[in-house]
Image 1 (cartoon, rainbow, N blue to C red):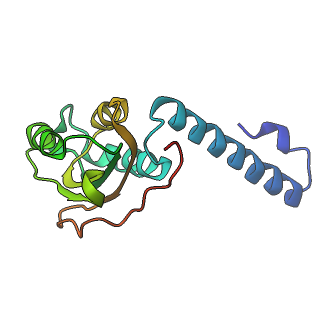
Image 2 (cartoon, one colour; image 1 turned 180 degrees about the horizontal axis):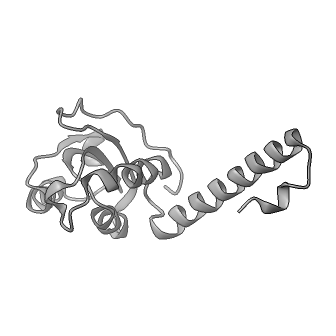
Length: 146
């Protein structure tokens, strides 16, 4: 992968390797944004890093996350709440006049894709919660694409 850098002095080689790492990181985040445009890249990266520890061909052993979904104004929050309960088995906390839903749930890339594909969703954020419960809402809406 870094064969092109071996002709340089050690300091230059390290600099080129680190530059290459930054470029690959930018490419990865661009892919995240293309496939899951409404999901914060940090959430995707964290989920991918944990996925291997939990993977067993189904989502029964998926990692637990506090997932925060920011929606458009004017949606029926009771319908949204019931949809979330049906999908996750968890009752969401609802904030910001029905535009911010928070659940502690098992999370997979497939679930993130489904959430991201919802027309009423503006943004998805979250934190790994492991085996402990959620502390509730910790994210603010970024304000882009309103």
